[in-house]
Structures are given as C-alpha cells and as structure tokens.
Length: 520
Image (cartoon, rainbow, N blue to C red; front, side, top):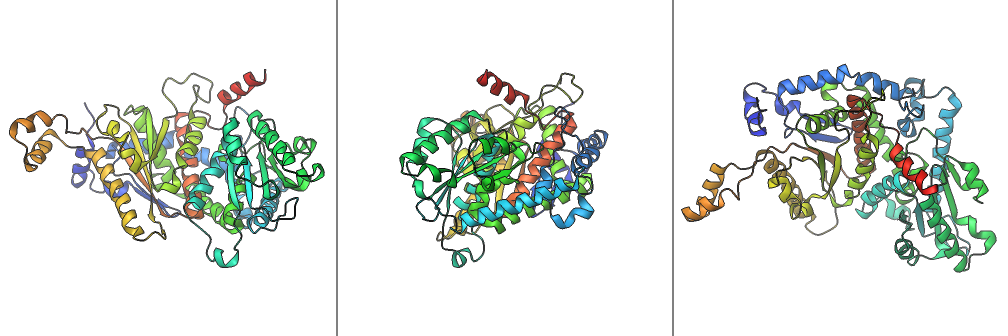
C-alpha cells in the first residue's frame, strides 16, 4: 500500500491527526523547527518515537553526558559539551564527566586563558615585532580546525554582527583570515594582503603533524623572515592549538602561546575549545561566551525534553525516515541568510565524517545506507540553479531550510529585502511539499489565456509532483547565542541518528587511512 502524500497528510489534519501541525513544531534555545512538510503521519511518528525508545536514545545521551566511552572504537568519551559547560553548574551537571575533577577544572582554566589572549588581540593590545598593534590573525588549519571557526566567524562578522556598544568601547578592528588549503595560490593570495609586522598566525592541529597545515606554516615562517622579522622575534607572533603541546614546544613555540585541546575532542566538534580562538578574536571574549551559552541551552533541552518534543531527536528521526524508508539518499541544505553560507561545508563534515560508516557498533556490516549525502548552498541562488532538479528531476531529495527571523541590516529598505528572501523560502517549501497537479496546471494556464492546444501541450511540462519532505529551522536572530544553539542542534541530531542506526559517529578511519598512505 503506497504511503499517503504530503497533500493527503496535510488534508487529514482535521481527521486522523487533528493536532499534526502543532505536534510537528518544536522550539528550543531561541530556535524553532517547523516540520509540517515532513512526510510523517500519526502512526509513523509514533512508530519512530517507539524506535527511539527501543534504541535507548536517552541512555546513550546520558552516557555521553557522563563521560562514558561512547567512542567505543577509540575507547574515549565524546565530551565536546563539557567545553561549553558553565563552571557554576558543576555540582549538578558534571559530577561524572571525568574521573579526575582536576581534568574538569583544566578545561575551564584553558578556556579563560584562551579568551584572555583572544581579547588582547581583539582590542589591539598584542604588539608585533615592530611595536605596532596586531591587525590581522591568520588561522592555519584544515577540517575541524578550519570549518567550524571559519563558518562561525563569517556568520557573525561578514554579516555585520557586533557586540552591543562595540564601536564606542573599541575602535580597533582585528581581521581574521583562514588558510586550509596548501595550494600555492591560496597561500600566496592570503599572505600578499598582509603586513608581517602586524600579523599573528594560529596553527591548529590536534596531532601537530597534519602535513597540509605544517606546509602552510613553513611558508608563512619564510614569508615573515623575508619581510624583515628578526629571527629571535619570529615566534612572538605564533600561536599553537594542539593536543600535543610537547611537539609545539619542540618546534619552537612559546609555552604561553600554546593552547591545549584534549584527545576526547573530535575535530568536527572542537569549535567550542581553543580551536575557536580565531572566532573569539573576531567577536571578543563576551561574544564567544554567548556562543557557548547558546549551545549550552540546546544541550539542556536535548538532555531534558521529552522524546516527542526533543528538537535534535526529531531532526534525527526525520533524517532516518527520509533516507532509509522514503529512499532519499541525499539532503539539501538551503540557507536563506547569506552570512550563514558556510554552514553547508561545516555540516558536510559534521554529518558525513560522523555517520558515513559501513559497520554497526557490533562490527557487523550495515545492510542499509548510513550517513546522507549533504549538499546545498544559498537558497535564493539555488532557486535559479539546482532547485529545478528538486522540483522535477525525478530524484527525491529531503531539504532543510535555514533562516533568520529578525536580522537587522543598515542597508536602506533592508526589511523589504529580508521579506523577499523569507517569502521565497516559504513559497519554495510549500511548492516542494505540495507541487501542482495536472488539473491545477491546466486551470492556471487557462487563466493565463493560453489556447487549449498550448494548454494541453504544456501541462505535462508545467506540473510538479511535490511530495518533497522538508523542514525549516528558524533562528530568532543571527547572533553568537543563536548560532551556538544551531551548531549544537545538529551535533545532537547527528549523534541521535547514529544511535538509531547503531553506528559509531566519533571516529573517522577513512580519513586516517588517507593520512597513513600520504605519510608512507
């Protein structure tokens, strides 16, 4: 028996599931999830919630929170939520994070030390070898050492966000740049725009052996020397973030400029740690603290909300249903706020590196697809490109729309611009869900005044099947707290979907194989 279409499901709200629209609405930490366009009926929703209970999602969430070895293949906890925890909550929330309480305090101490350095750079109090204030910070890193900080910095700074009263408090502007690709032209283009006397480099590598990162760092060292930096002052303007501080010291980095991350911090969930230093430089210590607070609010929701109102779990259940039952092998991410464009490559790593696995936790081969293929970009641009395939291409592709409800901009008539963008989102979400039947097309073409013979000829070309499952995630505002909540939402979603599939989301052996072949 075929499953009901989205048209049928929506029409049935007054019958079999009168509260469907309200049930498929979720809110947490200043975010709102509208899932009315998911192809979910009442029985399916109840079955999916039953699956979440069967797969012990609450148990796995508690185990992760308590610092148990949820990363079973590497025998580690996955404690990225500890990185954004509030020290004041320790008695209630962190009693079981790590076996040694000093390890917990070390996380908070390192955070404060990193924020102090970031604030000094943010305010222009760090001086280069010529005595001038630092004006530019270059982050050198790849993967998780680049995508998270880059995306968040662009989302907040390229979009014009600034802390309240920032202009009056501090006129200094520190620009943040990102170098991830060792391609010569990429490195050259960045360095050519900088002044060696006023530039600080941040080398981010968990192992401190990442060949791409070390190659770029070597080139930048040579560039500084050629620009006249005295050899005994070169390391004054270098910072290292690593789980191997011993290797950084051996490479000549000053101990006070080395910031520690921990083995239990995965690269794709590390922006909350000292990996987030470039973001903290860009938005200031208070902005970064707000970023952590937003993520922490989503953590609290995830750990405490009942299953049927749990936003991360809902996203995971929709993802499982769409991929493994509705046979949607990929998921498009359509961004309707241009500063958030970097969220797509960030999410590609988070989702596909985490859940692109071929075996279950037991080691048995998976007989079903696991991680979805994540792709997408700015929605308005996509409407004039790949949305044609979404509407009529014959592929069923699930879509997540992401938008900001209130986003101030100094452009004249900015509200009219924003209204046009968000009206486009709503129209596309509805069109993808409900399409247009041949009968509706015939009527529309008749109203356009087409002759009957043209009407008949064009109706097949201008009809749309619809039935494309989609959700919309709304941020109340685009600021550090709401951005932090968005990232945490998808972190927990990925974890839940992994546990539903019983796969390991915290290792990345495919990545490690490529590294080993490069070094052999």
